[in-house]
Structure formats: C-alpha cells, structure tokens
Length: 611
Image (cartoon, rainbow, N blue to C red):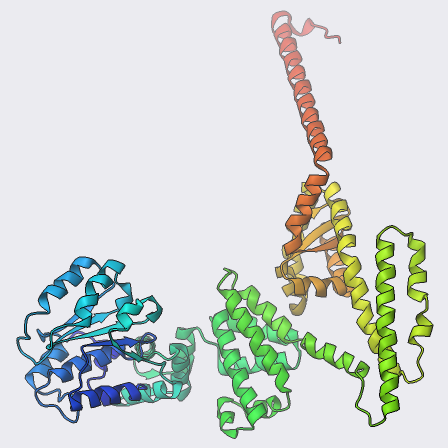
C-alpha cells in the first residue's frame, strides 16, 4: 500500500478525537442528538485547526445509521463510504478551483433532488472566501431556503472576505489555534502508536513552529521521520525547522539583559551560521523573555520548567520587569521590519544593539528624578520649591527670546552675554541641591547640540559636494571590505548601516540608515576616530567623516544641486570643452603623422621634417 502522510492517516474520525475544539464539537454533537440541525454552517479559523475534519465528521454523523451518543459509529455502510470519500450524498467542493457562477448554479440545480443513500445531502465548500462575487450572489437564495434534506457546510481561513449576507444566513463557529500543550500531547500519542522513539525537546520545537496548527505539526513530524526514520531527535528538529538551540537563545537573552552587545552579536551570528533564521530567533527570544517576565512578575515557579538551566532561572529573576517590556517591544518591531527588507540580518542586529542598552525613557526618568519636588509636610518648603520652579520657567522663557533674537541677526559676540546674563541670580537658591544642578545641566546640553547640529552638518555636506570626485568615492568603497576584518564584533554592525555616498580629496559623506545609529555615531568620537584611522591606513590618504541621516540625504543633495545649478553646469561645460580640445589635438597629431608617413613612403629616409 502506498505511504500515507501522518495528517491524513491520523485525521480525526469522531468528534472526541478532534483536538482543542471541545466547545464546537460538543455543540455539534448535541445538535445531532436533539435533532436541531441548521441548514447552513460556517466554520472559520486558522489553517490546520480542524475545520474540514469537523465538517466531514458532521456530514458522516448526519447520515450514520447507528449513531452513538451523537458520534458516527464508523462501522455502518454509510460511515465506511464517507471515510473512503465515495458517499454519493456528501459532496466536498474546493472553492479555490470551482469559484465561478456556473459551478454554483450547478449546485443550485441539483439540491432539489433527494439523497440517494443517506438522510441528508451535505455540501462541504472549502475555502469559500475564494468564490467570486457573482458566485456568492448565486448562492444566496439557495443558502437561505434550501430543501429540508440539504445541509451546507462552508469552511474558510479568511472570514473577513466572506460577504455579510452569507455570514448572516449561517451558524458561525470560530475555530481557535490549538495550544502548544495539546499539540505535544497529540504528537506523542501518534508516535507511541507508531512505536517511534522521540525526545521531548524535539516535540516542543515542532509544536512551537506549528503555531497552533495540527496539520502543520504533523507535516513537520512527517518530514523529520523522513530525515531519520528510527526516531525524532532534538538536533534534527532544529535542522529541519530552522530554529536555534534553546541554550543558545538563553545565552543571547542573558547577554542582552547584561548589556553585553558583543556577546549577543557573536552568539547570534553563530546561530545564523548553523541554519537558524532571523524570524525564528526573534520568535524564540520573545517566547523566552515572556516566560522570564512571568517568573519575574508573578513569581510562578511552574514557568521555571521553560528554562534549561537553574542558573539562568535564578539570574532572570534579578532583572527589572521594565527591561523585559522594552526587549519584547523592540523584538516585535524588528519582526515587523523583517517583512519589508531582503537583508534579514540587519533588523536582527539593530534589535540586538538597541535591546542591549538601557531604555532611553528609564534613563531620562532617573536623571529627572532629583529635580522633581519631593513630598514634604512643610508648607514653607513647598512654597520655596514652587518659587524656584517659577524662576526656572522664567529663565527658560528669557533664554528662548534672546536666542531667537540672535537667530534674527544679532552678532555672535552676544552669545556669551545670553548664556551668562542673570543666570546666577535666577539659579542661585539656598534650597537647591548639587544633584538638581547636575540634572539641569544634563537636561540642557542635548538641546543645544541637537539644535546646532543640523545646519552645521548641512554646511559640511555642501563643502564635500562642492569638491566631490568619483575617484575619491571609489577609493572609500574599495577599502570598505577591509574594515570588516579589523573592527570588533560590536563595531562591525556600524558598517552595515553606513554607506559612503560622496567624497572629496579630504572628506567623505556617509549616510546612516537609522536615526538611532546616526545619533549614537555622531556622539561617539572614539568610534569615528577609529574608523577614520583605519580608512587612512588602507586608503593611504586621510579622510574626515561627515555623517548624514538617510532620510535627509536626498533632500540635502537636491537642495545643493538646485542652489549650485549654474556652477555645476559651468563646470560640466568646461569639462566637455577640455575633452573636445584634447580630442581635436589628438586628431590633428594623427593627421600630421599620416602626412609624414606618406612623405617617407614617397621619398624615403632622406626626408627632413621641420615644424
């Protein structure tokens, strides 16, 4: 006998053998026992959750001649023919390939005929959302008022594509994803019946990849048995599914929580080299971080079983819950970014770098905490704090007005006056602590840097574009692979988000794909110095680096071309004229050479050539 796939061989034959849909199967059984059979049913839910299986069992039970408490007996002639697919009164139609009006009209013409063998004529229309609009309209009247001996069962994975007029004419049953525990239990039962050895970790990996679909789980299990017929091994499961070993994921998560970017990147690249995919790594990190958060927040010791080592379980309990919230949010963002790029490793590595740093909100909150007025039982103390706060607000308003005056045309010599003017009187308060002064300075510094950087950065880019040459840009691009071999693992990710786009004899413009990296690289002078030194080493020439965000590069270049249009056209015209002049001189020299050669041919070597 030909080999039969596991999901077909072990397809449920009774309602009780359907996994994870107890509410639906109990309802259908009770309807059969009580004789309250509706004329149309709609089964909706994710793939592989039992929709078609329940439809076949229900159709078989409706025509069974020996019902057993609402279950088909699977022994009578009708049940045996239904299992073999030869029951004439049960018609299964694939709407994906029979989605036209003519097919539905054919059904409409045949429903009036009585069943030939059973009690009901049952039409199972799979993937009903694939029907055309005309086909749905042709089905409407028949679906609403069919003959008493006809039952329609519609199945779909995309309920939103089914017209509301169809849904309102049916009893709708929403199938849910099957839990991971139920998937594991069913696979272990099947393997025990097949007398095949297995490892629990391998079954867990398959259940996680199946994502709530029993058919997917059994298909992967079938694939593993083809890979190694004798048993189901953990290492084989990782190879087939593209998942990473659980101990490696624990190492990556622990490195992220310990803010060790280098270790996280190293282990991740090792896992990728062994065949794991970026999506699976992120999925596993989210799953593991969620389990760790449950242990951390709820103190549930049952979740400790999700971890391979007791040491890891103990370490994750010491991490604040906010770190887990931040890590899970960043991982979900990276998963979303994977859908829009072909370079799957980039969003993963950016996630690793961001997740290994403390959240910006947490740091800002900690810095600002000393500035916030502390609760006090003294009314006089509160009054002093309110007066101080009002003075600081007034100082900010004054500084803002004076800065706007400078921007409107005042000389740069007044800058010092602005920043020192009345500052001691405004800030000097007896109740102000040194921590508050430090926090205020820290809060003001970034504002000045962020405010001054854009215009200064744009001028530097303009300067490079004015003197840019193709040769210098090619020089930088040629040394780019060499930089990969000398930079550290944590610094190498920088080259993946930087791209040289223009270069002059002394500077190079590099656009940065992500705003976060642009801010980090701009403020990290040590990293830029190291990169500049390596470029000079390999290119044998010194170039300073000018960074520009990817989102601003096109706008800056367009503005430069627009503002320097005449100058660029003049340079281009001058270059063309120089090429034409050089070409003319070459042709003239060529003509002179031809005349001399002809003279030598006529008169021999006695010819004396003079200009």
